Image (cartoon, rainbow, N blue to C red; front, side, top):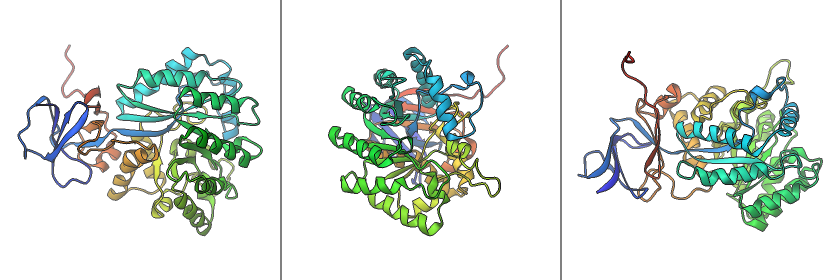
Length: 412
């Protein structure tokens, strides 16, 4: 007797419908549908619908989500968005950060997210408020979601005195990843050095925001790649945005990408924010403001796609749905084929799991039973095109969310 049997599901790459069995939160059976007689406490009929491993959100800012109602004006540049948010942070309380963060997590869970990496800011304005709230949330939501926490120096490390000590204290408190924003300090190299120093000292992965511009001369990612190799941190470093790479001549971009691939850095494309903020200085031939996803993939770089911001100065859109931003990327990056759809879903699942260093992830025997079923979709392309609201989500074999679309008229 097993706990759960999902019968007759379509799995990525499978040529026939499959049965997936779960016991004690772990997948114990993956077999062609009907091939084995299995008794289960709970039977879920998939009827050929698409079953994916739980979605991995690799890059999100919970502490500054849902701020639209507090904004007195709209941001028209990256620096303006940073300035406006710094002003709003003056009024943040622990309760406020908790409420907005939890609401965003609940949205994400309903959308199929079972793992998330969030950035918690530290600076002289917030102190450790965001970090402490994130650590409490990590414990509170563990039955719905695995939460990784990045300590982020949003206002810079050295231009905001005391931030270096706050970052180290956050790591002592138990955050999972050290973050960096080199463009927020006058000396990006010094910033990068300090982030790697913390990564080495506390033996944690590193996650940078970098090269978020249209200027092809912004190439901090190359310094990060060199330092990654020198520190033997290959596979442990991620970089979000990297949009300046998309403004470089292709030959130069390829040389840079070769270094990124050599350093095994995961690139996190954040299309909602990148498209909204970038290209604003162009009066004609406006640039798309994206990292060159296809070129990166062609060179073997692990590319993920993330929500990043939800309804704030950086991105006044969103509902914490990774499939929404994957659809947006598909349109903006000319990724409209069936093969592209499979690639995009891979970026939301296994590719993001690799970037976050997850273990026991996937739809195979021995993996944790973190899954999302799309009852109205039978392929990755269907999911991206339809973005169906009807989703069933399991965390360690326990159903944690289910959106059901009514099939008949409401009763009077």
